[in-house]
Length: 281
Ligand code: R5P
Image (tube, rainbow, N blue to C red; front, side):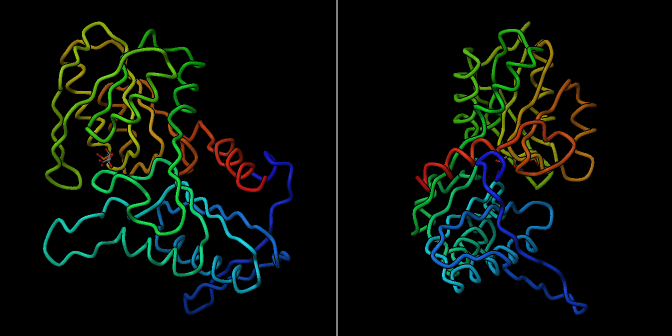
């Protein structure tokens, strides 16, 4: 990110005490500075979240003029509702903590917004949800493996990403409907799309267990689709999700580096850099 912007990155030391507690020390001079903090919360979300809270609180305490946070993968956003009595509203808790330490402005990328539809419904500070979908669709276009693909969003929420990707690719899109029975069990049904003879690009925000993509691919294959590729912003890829998706007949799976991993072919650095330029100009 810093090299995209032609800047030197700020420095911090982070380590763990023998008793398991975290230690964080800001090494750069931040007094009166506008500081951009970039912290994704993947795979060990509690750890990344806590580092983030220590860092923001320290920056404000050390006299930073403004702290703008970029959270490429925002963990806990899916627990935005009490699905069973007594459940914690994790999304709300995390948002409150982020504000409480003094974050002035927040940027997320394709943050899960299913029932909560706008960042402004959760945060009182200025908040912006960017999308990596045009970057992903451009990558798919440049790779050139798909011919006039039909873009499919596997559930209602994915319509926003299907629309963005199809605009970038200059092609059409449709959206399925999805019912989730458990964390790893979903049922997907087509709305109107007929995939017969078409190349397909399935787009989604997150691939976690892979259940959603596998179920959508099964339906598309049964409709007679040609080759299927998948693009997602956050490739969490829990356990063996990637190999199960490939076994389901998906040729390529593409993700971004909001969650660094084996399919992080697209970097969100230019997207964040563009907004850092805007917020600091
Ligand atoms: C949920 O609504 C999200 O948009 C994704 O479709 C979901 O998180 C994918 O999860 P999984 O890969 O476990 O089906």
